[in-house]
Image (cartoon, rainbow, N blue to C red; front, side, top):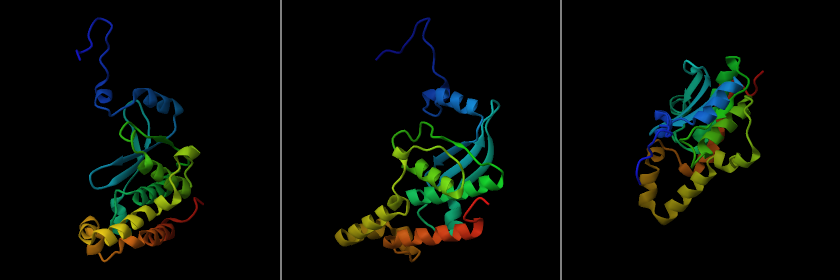
Amino acid sequence: MGRAKGPTYQVPFRRRREARTNYRLRYKLLKSDKPLFVVRRSLKYIYVSIMKPDIGGDKTIVSVSSKILKDKYGWYGLKNTPAAYLTGYIAGKYALKKGVKEAILNLGVAWSKNASIPYAAVMGARDAGLDIPMGEEVLVDEDRIKGLHIAEYAKLLKERDPDLFKRRFSIYLEMGIDPMKIPEMFEDVKNKIISDLGDTDG
């Protein structure tokens, strides 16, 4: 396919060409003048930030990495759905302490195919007391939030392929954690976070 050219052809902005920025959505978010709830994922962690949009560059109000779940609460699955929820919950509590009561999800182009992680983070922040609009059709199932799907997969794998089970869940097993008990562990970690940060926004 030949490259588009001619006097009427407009070259897309670099960040849009690189699938990093949706400029139409960006414009709408700027017009709302509300803080942005942003979820990103690296090779190791999930990051939840609350940003104040600005023409000169977004200003960070709150930034939380799922690394805190391991360092402070003993949670070791740092890129999964439960981790997204818990990180979002912590970010929501931090935001409330900074006087931020509402935000808008900036999903971005990176999550166009799999948005369960950012939506789980939003659900965590909402449960923490932060007001973020969210349609019922994108709510993540509560069992998935708690990691039941991970526990069921671990059980199935242990029965069918013990060697693969040991490799796939090696981090948990090395720490003496039974991956089939992840839902119970989720509740324990959430209760610790609530104990630290409070159950309501006060």
